[in-house]
Amino acid sequence: MNKFLGLREQEKTAFFIDGANLYKAARNLGFDIDYKSLLAKAQDGCQLIRASYYTAIQEDRDQDYSPLRPLVDWLDYNGYTMVTKTTREFTDPQGRKRFKGSTDVELVVDMMLLADRLDHLILFSGNGDFRRVIEAIQAKGVRVTVVSTVKSSPPMASDELRRQADAFIDLADLEKTIGRSGGPARRPKPAADYDDDFEDDYEDDFEDVD
Image (cartoon, rainbow, N blue to C red; front, side, top):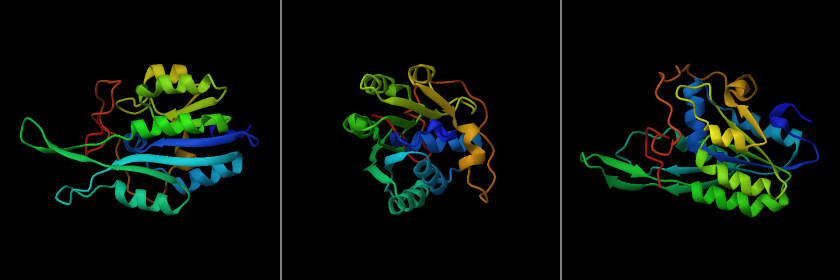
Protein backbone atom coordinates (compact mmCIF):
# COMPACT_ATOMS: atom_id res chain seq x y z
CA MET A 1 0.00 0.00 0.00
CA ASN A 2 1.25 3.44 -0.94
CA LYS A 3 1.66 5.70 2.08
CA PHE A 4 0.29 8.65 0.10
CA LEU A 5 -3.46 8.81 0.81
CA GLY A 6 -3.46 5.07 1.49
CA LEU A 7 -3.40 4.36 -2.25
CA ARG A 8 -3.10 0.77 -3.50
CA GLU A 9 -1.59 0.01 -6.87
CA GLN A 10 -4.30 -2.38 -8.06
CA GLU A 11 -7.27 -0.37 -6.78
CA LYS A 12 -9.52 1.61 -9.07
CA THR A 13 -9.66 4.98 -7.37
CA ALA A 14 -11.36 8.32 -7.90
CA PHE A 15 -10.89 11.77 -6.36
CA PHE A 16 -13.88 13.98 -5.62
CA ILE A 17 -12.77 17.48 -4.68
CA ASP A 18 -15.17 19.90 -3.03
CA GLY A 19 -13.25 22.86 -4.40
CA ALA A 20 -14.50 25.66 -2.19
CA ASN A 21 -14.20 23.61 0.98
CA LEU A 22 -10.69 22.39 0.15
CA TYR A 23 -9.57 25.84 -0.95
CA LYS A 24 -10.63 27.33 2.36
CA ALA A 25 -9.09 24.50 4.38
CA ALA A 26 -5.71 24.99 2.70
CA ARG A 27 -5.96 28.76 2.99
CA ASN A 28 -6.70 28.51 6.70
CA LEU A 29 -3.65 26.28 7.11
CA GLY A 30 -1.53 28.85 5.29
CA PHE A 31 -0.54 27.04 2.09
CA ASP A 32 -1.65 26.41 -1.48
CA ILE A 33 -2.14 22.97 -3.00
CA ASP A 34 0.08 21.81 -5.85
CA TYR A 35 -2.58 20.10 -7.95
CA LYS A 36 -0.05 18.95 -10.53
CA SER A 37 1.86 17.06 -7.85
CA LEU A 38 -1.37 15.71 -6.35
CA LEU A 39 -2.46 14.23 -9.67
CA ALA A 40 0.98 12.80 -10.49
CA LYS A 41 1.31 11.08 -7.13
CA ALA A 42 -2.18 9.64 -7.45
CA GLN A 43 -1.48 8.28 -10.93
CA ASP A 44 1.71 6.65 -9.66
CA GLY A 45 0.01 5.08 -6.65
CA CYS A 46 -3.21 3.60 -8.01
CA GLN A 47 -5.42 3.07 -11.03
CA LEU A 48 -6.85 6.57 -11.05
CA ILE A 49 -10.18 6.53 -12.86
CA ARG A 50 -11.04 10.20 -12.43
CA ALA A 51 -10.12 13.30 -10.47
CA SER A 52 -13.13 15.62 -10.34
CA TYR A 53 -13.15 19.17 -9.02
CA TYR A 54 -16.45 20.87 -8.08
CA THR A 55 -16.99 24.56 -7.54
CA ALA A 56 -19.38 27.45 -8.11
CA ILE A 57 -17.96 30.37 -10.06
CA GLN A 58 -18.89 34.00 -9.59
CA GLU A 59 -19.14 35.76 -12.95
CA ASP A 60 -20.05 39.25 -11.75
CA ARG A 61 -17.33 41.59 -13.01
CA ASP A 62 -18.17 44.28 -10.46
CA GLN A 63 -17.02 42.06 -7.62
CA ASP A 64 -13.48 41.47 -6.43
CA TYR A 65 -11.40 39.17 -8.62
CA SER A 66 -11.96 35.54 -7.72
CA PRO A 67 -8.75 33.64 -6.89
CA LEU A 68 -10.46 30.47 -8.11
CA ARG A 69 -10.73 31.46 -11.78
CA PRO A 70 -7.10 30.84 -12.85
CA LEU A 71 -7.04 27.63 -10.81
CA VAL A 72 -10.23 26.34 -12.45
CA ASP A 73 -8.90 27.14 -15.93
CA TRP A 74 -5.58 25.41 -15.21
CA LEU A 75 -7.21 22.29 -13.78
CA ASP A 76 -9.49 22.04 -16.81
CA TYR A 77 -6.48 21.72 -19.12
CA ASN A 78 -4.36 19.51 -16.87
CA GLY A 79 -6.16 16.26 -16.20
CA TYR A 80 -9.01 17.19 -13.89
CA THR A 81 -12.69 16.78 -14.66
CA MET A 82 -14.29 20.13 -13.89
CA VAL A 83 -17.87 20.48 -12.68
CA THR A 84 -18.79 24.13 -12.27
CA LYS A 85 -21.93 26.15 -11.74
CA THR A 86 -22.48 29.88 -12.11
CA THR A 87 -23.52 31.55 -8.89
CA ARG A 88 -26.88 33.26 -8.54
CA GLU A 89 -26.97 36.90 -7.53
CA PHE A 90 -29.28 38.16 -4.78
CA THR A 91 -29.60 41.10 -2.41
CA ASP A 92 -29.44 40.45 1.33
CA PRO A 93 -31.64 42.22 3.94
CA GLN A 94 -28.97 44.91 4.35
CA GLY A 95 -29.10 45.69 0.63
CA ARG A 96 -25.75 44.14 -0.18
CA LYS A 97 -25.21 42.19 -3.38
CA ARG A 98 -24.44 38.55 -2.57
CA PHE A 99 -24.03 35.31 -4.49
CA LYS A 100 -25.28 31.78 -3.98
CA GLY A 101 -23.97 28.64 -5.55
CA SER A 102 -23.45 25.00 -4.61
CA THR A 103 -22.26 21.93 -6.49
CA ASP A 104 -23.01 19.54 -3.63
CA VAL A 105 -25.80 17.78 -5.52
CA GLU A 106 -23.60 17.26 -8.58
CA LEU A 107 -20.83 15.85 -6.42
CA VAL A 108 -23.14 13.40 -4.64
CA VAL A 109 -24.75 12.21 -7.87
CA ASP A 110 -21.38 11.64 -9.55
CA MET A 111 -20.06 9.71 -6.55
CA MET A 112 -23.04 7.39 -6.62
CA LEU A 113 -22.85 6.89 -10.39
CA LEU A 114 -19.16 5.98 -10.30
CA ALA A 115 -19.14 3.98 -7.06
CA ASP A 116 -19.86 0.61 -8.70
CA ARG A 117 -16.65 0.94 -10.73
CA LEU A 118 -14.40 1.82 -7.79
CA ASP A 119 -12.44 0.15 -5.03
CA HIS A 120 -11.42 3.36 -3.29
CA LEU A 121 -13.04 6.80 -3.25
CA ILE A 122 -11.24 9.82 -1.84
CA LEU A 123 -13.34 12.82 -0.86
CA PHE A 124 -11.57 16.14 -0.34
CA SER A 125 -14.07 17.88 1.91
CA GLY A 126 -14.96 18.26 5.56
CA ASN A 127 -18.64 18.95 4.95
CA GLY A 128 -20.72 16.79 7.27
CA ASP A 129 -23.60 16.78 4.79
CA PHE A 130 -21.69 14.14 2.82
CA ARG A 131 -21.80 11.60 5.64
CA ARG A 132 -24.89 9.80 4.36
CA VAL A 133 -23.60 9.39 0.80
CA ILE A 134 -20.32 8.01 2.16
CA GLU A 135 -22.30 5.47 4.15
CA ALA A 136 -24.21 4.46 1.00
CA ILE A 137 -21.01 4.10 -1.01
CA GLN A 138 -19.38 1.99 1.71
CA ALA A 139 -22.41 -0.31 1.53
CA LYS A 140 -21.35 -1.05 -2.06
CA GLY A 141 -17.99 -2.30 -0.79
CA VAL A 142 -16.02 0.82 -1.64
CA ARG A 143 -13.34 2.08 0.74
CA VAL A 144 -13.74 5.81 1.48
CA THR A 145 -11.01 8.19 2.60
CA VAL A 146 -11.77 11.76 3.65
CA VAL A 147 -9.16 14.52 3.36
CA SER A 148 -9.76 17.72 5.31
CA THR A 149 -8.41 19.28 8.48
CA VAL A 150 -9.11 19.71 12.16
CA LYS A 151 -5.88 21.66 12.65
CA SER A 152 -7.13 24.94 11.16
CA SER A 153 -9.02 27.68 12.97
CA PRO A 154 -11.87 26.90 12.75
CA PRO A 155 -11.61 23.14 12.05
CA MET A 156 -12.95 22.27 8.60
CA ALA A 157 -13.81 18.58 9.08
CA SER A 158 -17.04 17.60 10.82
CA ASP A 159 -16.74 14.94 13.47
CA GLU A 160 -19.51 12.76 12.01
CA LEU A 161 -17.83 12.73 8.60
CA ARG A 162 -14.51 11.67 10.14
CA ARG A 163 -16.19 8.85 12.06
CA GLN A 164 -18.02 7.58 8.99
CA ALA A 165 -14.97 7.44 6.72
CA ASP A 166 -12.75 4.36 6.59
CA ALA A 167 -9.77 6.68 6.93
CA PHE A 168 -9.31 10.37 7.66
CA ILE A 169 -6.20 12.23 6.51
CA ASP A 170 -5.53 15.70 7.85
CA LEU A 171 -4.63 18.13 5.08
CA ALA A 172 -2.04 19.74 7.35
CA ASP A 173 -0.03 16.51 7.25
CA LEU A 174 0.13 16.71 3.43
CA GLU A 175 1.66 20.18 3.22
CA LYS A 176 5.20 18.93 2.62
CA THR A 177 3.95 16.48 0.01
CA ILE A 178 1.50 18.53 -2.04
CA GLY A 179 2.01 22.07 -0.72
CA ARG A 180 2.93 24.54 -3.42
CA SER A 181 6.21 26.30 -2.80
CA GLY A 182 7.19 29.74 -3.98
CA GLY A 183 3.84 31.39 -3.29
CA PRO A 184 3.22 34.30 -0.94
CA ALA A 185 3.18 33.35 2.71
CA ARG A 186 -0.21 33.36 4.37
CA ARG A 187 -1.23 33.52 7.97
CA PRO A 188 -3.84 31.06 9.18
CA LYS A 189 -7.12 32.78 10.02
CA PRO A 190 -7.69 33.58 13.69
CA ALA A 191 -9.56 31.10 15.83
CA ALA A 192 -13.33 31.13 15.72
CA ASP A 193 -16.14 29.04 17.10
CA TYR A 194 -16.47 25.68 15.34
CA ASP A 195 -19.50 25.33 13.11
CA ASP A 196 -20.32 22.03 11.47
CA ASP A 197 -22.27 23.80 8.72
CA PHE A 198 -19.65 25.33 6.44
CA GLU A 199 -21.88 26.07 3.47
CA ASP A 200 -22.40 29.73 4.32
CA ASP A 201 -18.68 30.43 4.65
CA TYR A 202 -16.72 28.68 1.92
CA GLU A 203 -15.47 31.68 0.01
CA ASP A 204 -14.99 35.39 0.40
CA ASP A 205 -16.38 35.80 -3.11
CA PHE A 206 -19.71 34.08 -2.76
CA GLU A 207 -21.92 32.13 -0.41
CA ASP A 208 -21.94 28.43 -1.23
CA VAL A 209 -25.41 27.63 0.02
CA ASP A 210 -28.41 25.69 -1.18
